[in-house]
Length: 437
Image (tube, rainbow, N blue to C red; front, side, top):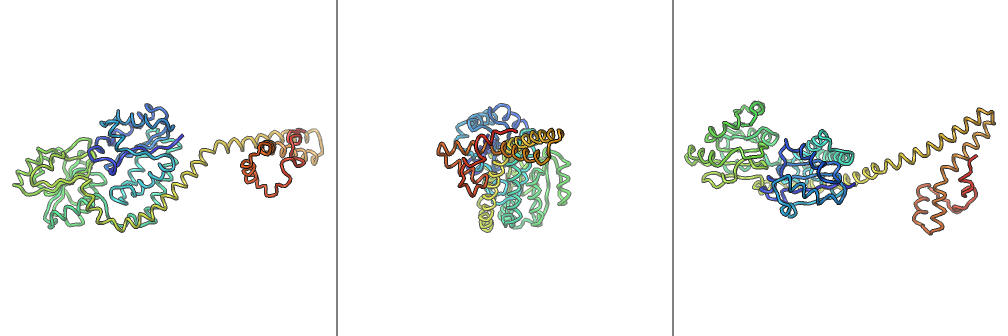
């Protein structure tokens, strides 16, 4: 069984491709059930789907890789050729290292951004509740999340407020120097919009409104900032009132079209409107950017703003990479231990069975009135002979066949520092091993 991390991200795929391959939150469970059912060899699966990446983490046989790509091309509006050009794959320890970098924010478009840790944790919780998280991915997720938390607490990677939300507000301040006189409409009520609202509030924004499909969620967030709450269906009628629009709803389809924005611009009498679409899939139709007096930016457009704030985080990232490397080594070690548990259980069980057998013989001898010292001596001799029988035979065969590497292993395993007697020494031969009093 192998671990595969397979997917694409902002480095390998355009926003247009990322939004086509993204899994909406309400579709992830069905996708997990389908991939473990339809792809031969896949026994466990988890999906991380964010604005920056879509990645599948699977426990599978290595020859199932091609089937995984085929499954993805059949379940998302993307061709196999597009996937071949945009996807990457990491196996076993490299897959663990990749996930640790993702969870730590080292692989994010905004270096060190904090939201991804919660998104990774959520992805594995969904897999757990769906029933596609088995022992292989459980071990991977536990060590990866533990490593990411160490990066957060023991490095300066997350010390500066650099995030997509922060970048969006920074860009708004560049467009409108007097942001205190402006109004902003936020589409959505999730974590990213919460951060946007927090940043805008700290910059003394003039007026804020929050629109969401579920009005209660919009009202809950709006209450924190003394903002107006509305439903998404009411946005078109009030859009002209706002100078700034920042969207991140999680919808699989655009929630704001070119026609609604065009009408709002006419009402505004050509006053400019600044719009940032943080969502993938996008919330605002890309054609809106063609309208005069509209400044539309996507998540990919924020990169330059973010770059200017990252030097300190880059220095911290070098420190963080050491935690990731150590975490990946720990994962490999723990995985090997986990995979060999059955061997250890069998070894211990076999020794315990031999012990029980000899104890029963000793009890029968004692019940007959045999001298306890004689019984104890035979018990020790018989148990010792049975326990050393297999390694003694292995030593004799290894010596006869010249397999020095096995002899070295046995010396290390049994701590045979003085091996001058060799496997043919008295008491170690076959006759002694097979004696069964």
